[in-house]
Image 1 (cartoon, rainbow, N blue to C red):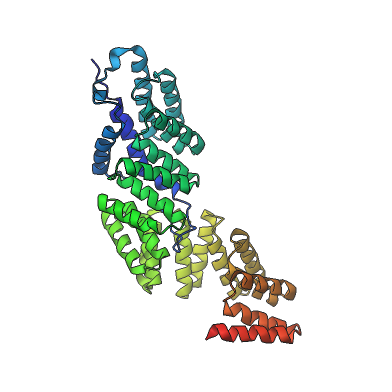
Image 2: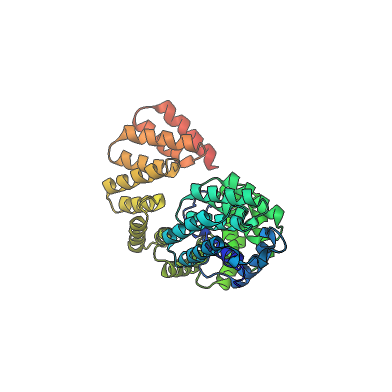
Length: 421
């Protein structure tokens, strides 16, 4: 008789892939962190974590105490659907997600809806859809998995992940919280909730990262993401400690080197920062943010040629990275290429309309090109965005005086002096 081993490989598939899943979900998130470093999971799975999670999940998803002894040979349909699930699992591991989806579709057509493991098959297909970027479909499958078994912690975690990827951080938090309620020792759920809370600016994120690390001290991603959060909170030394820990756990973790480079730069350790940025780029040559930040460091060190090369590379890798246009615009301005600088500052503002510094420098370039009206509009806009920027008042004061607005110039200059104290 063929023993019913479906639960083993389905749960292993779901958990193993969940451990990797933040790779894409966190890749482009730059909004909350002062450090624009993205976050991702390590490609090399922590096998001890998988084993412990698998044991816990088995307990949470069993419909009854006899579940593991169900015999696939009881009916042909069960045998057929199990074969498709096994094929789908294999294809998933080979990253053939389209093929895996076809097999899971077949499995769901064949599995009896009262089969105690139907919940896991839907959860498995939901995981495949998640990898294909079909978050709506993934959520629908995970809804079904939860409907079939309201205590399926894996399904709640998976739905939280899909919601997080689709930008529904509040929904993700609700799902992670449900998973934690069902299993207070579920480290990954604390980690996922910490990430979602971070994106909402919720200070509870720090407590979640702390708990995730307490439950799983080997979670390199939790150290890295807590490091990012520490940077956002202005705790550069705390961030540095977490990046050091992440690198100790995984010496090939490129984003930890990137984050540590940013922290070291903020602490005045330019030499250490440059070394870390170099290593981050060596490990991940496609990291546009690393090129951008190394370019800023080169610029601060007076190495304009290397800075320009890095800004150009960052823009090639990611044409939507506003900071690289801003940096390159500064270099073009210094070299006398005012038209090129204006073009870069235009692009910076198009990508980030709330960057008041970009309006200030563009205003100055417009002034130098003889566009006084455009310059004045930019200074006005910069002050609207940040009414405490002394330099904006100073430049507008000079321009107003040149245009004959003595009262306005005097008012701006007084404000400049007030803010400069």
